[in-house]
Image (tube, rainbow, N blue to C red; front, side, top):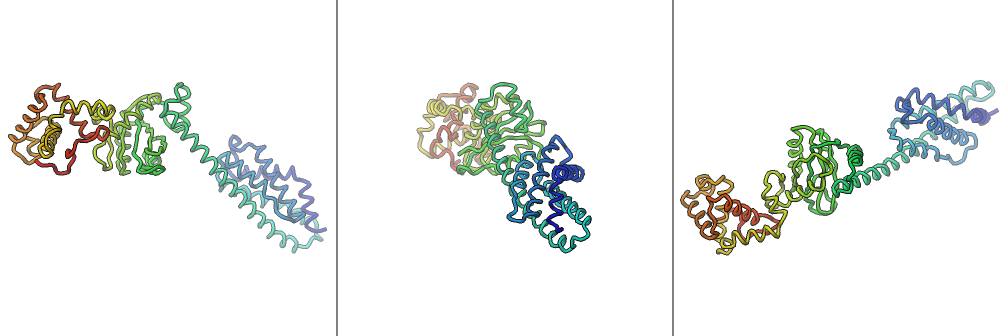
Length: 401
């Protein structure tokens, strides 16, 4: 009798062997003890199939068949089992099979020990092959599942932003799958991308998650858009700090309560982004400058308003036009104080008053009339809006005083 005969005896007890290996794995690997994660029948079937291939190879030699190992790696990846636990289970299974072979061999005193020594190296070589097959299948399946989850997540985010999801229950289901609370407040973010496929806010979802802020994101050719849950009063300030650190041009919507309002919030966020002055990085909230956002929302109407209200000023020669517009802009930012405006421009307050009277004369609008002030303020915002188009010379870094 040789070791092949012993292996044949063990193989004849295959159903019982598979069951005993499964029970040992469940006892020694905590992750396998949860029947809701790994059903016992699935574990027993996997143990039996793998033991069958190993014993057949040990008995008949030939090329090892790692198909069951790859299938196990695929199934366990789908079940969410960590690879380390799977490899631990495989080591237990191989040790159990070898111990059974050794114990059976001890019942045959005529069997030389040298055969056990020779075959022990072979079984651990098989363990290495099976472990490689399990790991490769697990990695491949995990990558496929990640792509599938990413695609589904992206589709759900797109459905929220486009308004395709309208039913209340479906909205709740989408929120749960995206890891978002079912109720707001929320805010939408739109960040300008420098080139297609490049995230202007790299790793933003991870940064927000670390700050305990749930979010969901989608990358478009020209923008990265996201939905952030603002679960606490401090959440918005935290989120803004994270967005500013990214060094991108970002627009943020007003807070809103229902996911059903996500498409409108996206429009507000994009308007805030469009209204962000200059070209430097920055974060603009719609609520910080609602009039400016309205100007950006209606560029054609804003351009007409600018022409109707400020045309006499815009038609002036460049130097005078720039002085008057810059003075008017500083007067607005100073809350209508000629003294503060003069300090900012390093001129005498009477110079500021003279320039403001000149604006009044040219436009026919009095700066003491609230309605006229509103018209001038909106028209001035239009000159600064990228969506409307700026008048020449009004955006110089150091305009003449």
